[in-house]
Amino acid sequence: MPWREGGLGPPSLQTKVALATAAEIPDGDEDFPALIAALAAEGVAAEPAVWDGQVDWSRFGLVVLRSTWDYAERRDAFLSWARSLRRVLNPVPVLEWNTDKQRYLIDLAAAGVPVVPTEFVAPGEPFGLPDEPFVVKPAISAGGRSSARFEAGDTAAARLVARIHGEGRVAMVQPYLGDVTETDLVYIDGTYSHALARRVPLPAASGQDVFYLAEELGPAEPSVRDRAVAEQALACAPEELLYGRVDLVDGAVLELEIAEPSLYLGFGQGAAAAFAAAIATRL
Image (tube, rainbow, N blue to C red; front, side):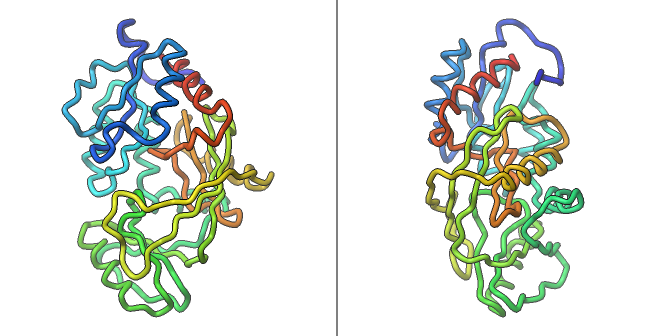
């Protein structure tokens, strides 16, 4: 898929790519070494760059979002930064849509995509305690921060909702599906790449003050139905995608990750090379 925004730019910029990350992990996540090496094999120089750091972004022909996981608490600043870039992937309309779970989950459901049942509670709206185990998280969130599970009728959930509202964010409430393992499907340049089984135990009673929750990973083989649901969800994106990950639980979308997801390239044979090639075609 060709790049659809702007021109090619000066030749001197065509082989310089920034892999955007967060200050907490300035060298990026576990995918960075393999991706940087694969890009070098394509003749593309790439380096980690902290999105809100002292960086001369004009040095880069393209910024690829990777581990910018601290955006959630200051989404407006993050989107303003993304809009200021000459070229960024995934593109800004995708980031605006996908960094708000309320916006995209409602759109997916309206398009007939199976999604985990979700109630949204905006600041000022009353919060009713579910009569079954449930999960509370912010609609704008990353890394599992400010997310927790509760037993039916647990009034402690109201304190977490109040905290989320105090930060000016919408709270979302979903049924607690137990200690389940997600099937996460990774797509590169519109093509299925690989999948993994992912388990992220949620803390009880209150959100943990951590950058991201610990996770357990393993290989997975998605069903035909899983792939159909994932591709139906990805098709709802407002623009073409360089990368994407769809997290499913029992065939329903838990999260559509097309802003800054880990792609777990080590779980897909040739995935780093395929991702690098897809980036190179956009230069």
